Image (cartoon, rainbow, N blue to C red):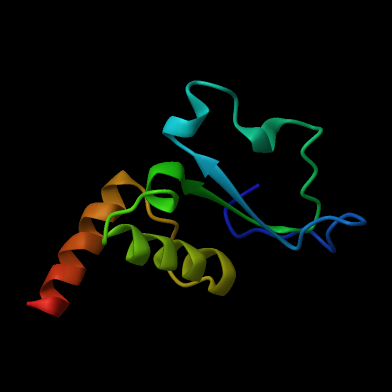
Amino acid sequence: MAPGATAGPPPEGGAPIVFVLSGSVQYGAPDPLDNPLFEVGGSTVGAVDFAAWYGSGSFDVPWVVNDIRAVLLGEGAVTDEKTGVRLFQRLRKTTA
């Protein structure tokens, strides 16, 4: 399922919003969204970078906010290694 995608109402008792941590936290494990036991049904789903979401650097906050805006509001895309560079450059320009 594409990030931010929905497919009807969430399953009974399911979460309406699911952020799946990806990247280094998986250590080569399969994507949890490919597991049939992890039913997300009509949930809004976003696969996000573990390191940024659990990081403690000042850049992690705008990264996470950007991801939330992308998944919940459809504004832009979830940040990855390439778009993270552009986000950082954009933030430096606005604070300079």
